[in-house]
Image (cartoon, helix red, strand yellow):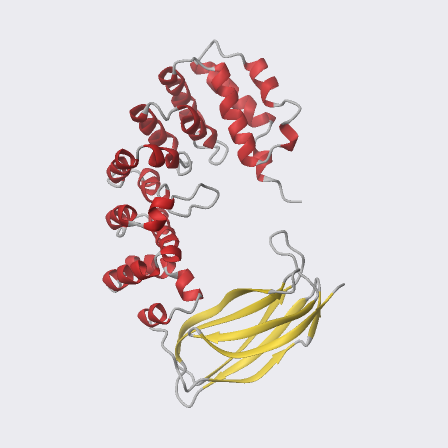
Length: 362
């Protein structure tokens, strides 16, 4: 069984954390700190709850002066930051909870704590409280020599960052985000460029016209920028947006047909749904984005659709046979219900065929 993320916060980590704090703060009460962490509510806490519990408990055992506590934590972090990336986000969480009244000290701390970890969650409370000052600081971070700090500038202001509070202001108007992304669009680091692309994808969900404008402006300048745009437009591509598909060369081709389409008429829960088909044309198939979608029957007898990419590329031949399968093994992120489902095939955003199949219980 896979290890739960919340179990990264275990006795070993807390013990190492405590020993490193003592090296920087001899008055630290290690035994009582550990006892306070592993109280009778610990087992029921999830990942972020454990993170917050550790950071707030630290506050009770560190000096009451915030600046002194940050000094201790920064020295502690330096000794631990090459070993514990996710676990060490307790340091940023401490800043998020207790540092909102000390902007300068907190910005310096988050800059330090983001290296080999990430301050992307903690910075958002400062964006909400000090929007102009924080965005100004993040623009300065785009010039850092350290890729982790540059990435914080783009990742921290994402309008829809997963696991984080949404930045409603930037969902409505992403102008300030775009100013940061513009400074990072040609960054030498793939780590940073991925963050830029993810932020663009967030923008596409609330402001698709803005992203289309950016894409037309940036495309074709260099390969790295084209990669950012392709990744940043992934939701629009998946949704079959004609303008964006055409921008990347996936134009509608009326000469392509689907032949020999085969699909299991029924499949049992836990088994694979198998299907195959052949794309045919009187000339070369050209540049294609080949996808399939499944309309899943839900508990309320309505349907929800999920689209999957099969492949994309330039096909010089006039036919291509594709064989694919989808697993109906139970997973934690999707519950399956027996009944009629639908599978459809899309070529460059256009649905060419749709068939029903029956999902049976085991």
